[in-house]
Amino acid sequence: MHDDQLLAWRITGATVRGASHRRSGLPNQDALAWRWPAASGAPAVLAVADGHGGPLYIRSDRGARIAAHTAITLLADFAAAHATTPALSAVKRVAAERLPRDLVLAWNQGVAADLAAEPISEREIAAAEKRASRAALDRLADDPRLAYGSTLLAAVLTKRYLLAAQLGDGDILAVNDDGTAAHWPLAPDPLLIANETTSLCSPDAWRHVRTYLQPVHAAAPQLVLLATDGYANSFVDQDGLLQAGGDLLTAIRDEGLAAVSRQLPAWLRATSAAGSGDDITVALAVRAGDPQP
Amino acid sequence: MSKLPGGALASRPLHFVWIADCSGSMGLDGKIQALNNAIREAIPHMQQVAAENPNAQVLVRAVAFSDGARWHLAQPTPVADFRWQDLKAGGVTDMGQAMKMLAEQLQPEAMPARALPPVLVLISDGQPTDKFDAGLQALMEQPWGKKAVRIAIAIGDDADLNVLQKFIGHPEFKPLQANNADTLVRYIKWASTEVLKSASSPASQVLDTRDSAVNVPLPAAPEAAPGPESAADVW
Image (cartoon, rainbow over all chains, first blue to last red; front, top):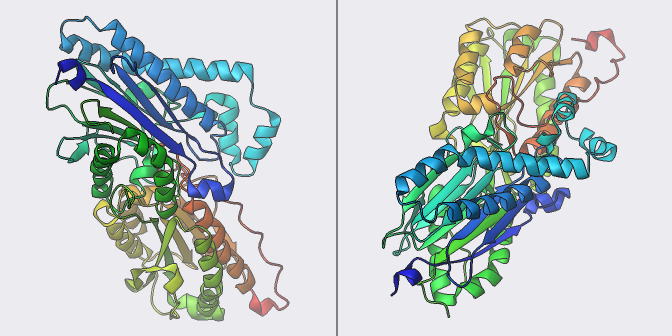
């Protein structure tokens, strides 16, 4: 197999409204975005985001979309800017030092543009008053960005390195050739329990962004999976999520990426209904060397 | 692919704990029986709320405190199977010991990370007779204790509101004051339905590390019931 083929990626994904959101009339507050050049297969860029469901976050579906879309633009630009940087250690340092600030800055700019185009209306505030406390509404009046609060998980997969960034809850898995999966290597933060998460709208949000860069070699993962926390919370334990990574790789190998793409929304809806009830978003990047029926 | 990707699926556990004062004073003026009746009356409503949200698995327990503390209902019991055995009054008010027992059960090893915030409902008519602050500290040192939705109901005028306020830990929310059986029924029903419904939602929000943070939007509490016809029915 030619190196270029070995290191090329194909992407799919799905985002579904959670079972409890359907019952309560809330929209899907997750978002999904990806980009990859079909000709070369790299760099592949993918992102998922989970807008907060709490009563204060009345535009979190927009905040999640802004997060996912600004992230893939930023990461694609990052990969292009560092395509010829000779030392990966330098790329890693820039990713750790600059990328968190750039991601949060880009999100804030996107939110500011959205607010300028459409300020939060009295009708939206009136709707929020049914669920939010007075103190929460006061905080929102002081800082309308809070309405857009969201997590972000993003990755760029180039022919030289794999780079991931995560702010808040959710999971990034690497699935090996034998189907075993592991968190890669941004393990779940034990502080993020009871529906609480760090967020793009947190003070000094960039400090909470974790990045990881891994050089590409032959043993690079066959599949990279990004998921919002509605997916992991649907399984009895973490092993169930890791098994999902292996099962999805098997399904892609057995049935092809197109077939998995078609079935993924139904799988995620059924998973939400029998599990967490939350919105679920999954992005998958699979090595192009795998068979594609 | 015939089965869904991944391991076994399950709704998220939601632990709901009654923390009931069974001191001797609860035996006066029918308070303990009013509490037993109120909880029993709330059960079908609680079960209905739980049934309306199948993505939360509501598990009920109860701690009783008087001379020391004990698990009145030790096993986390699915709400559909929840039955209430009457509490009996007698002894002092070792509320701090109850806090410590709760803290032990809310350790991370005992609580899966995917759990929803627990709901803790403290009901008391008196003042702690043991080291309440140490017990509360033990509870608040547990991440799940800090993140729990903590509700307090004072029965009668002798309840120590300062202690109940410390348990709630948030200046915006006050202890509910029940001065008669009808009001106690209202508050117990509110905690076991409206609060439960709110805690059952997977609605996420920004991490707040303050002890006074509220991670579940609390619905407005009901008004007290109109006063009883007989002064003898007032606690």
